[in-house]
Image 1: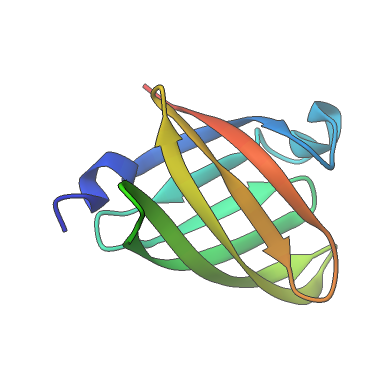
Image 2: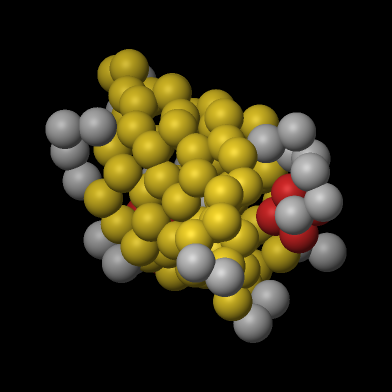
Length: 110
């Protein structure tokens, strides 16, 4: 639970490998919100979902691993992802089940 605190908060998606920033911010500024209980939400472009995650040790690094369900362009969608904190930034990868995946970088909102 103590490690969860570092991940908790709202993070603004600053960069994605698979999509440009115009798409990421198309509907709302792209974000990932993680609660202290590991649940949360995210949206980038026309993809949004509810997150259910846990902090797991990956070597020496705490890693937030999550599944998600939501929608992509109004169609049901789901997937998984993971994130670590490096130099104060949230960095990871999000997967859309049977579709795309992308690395992302996000900055904690004040």
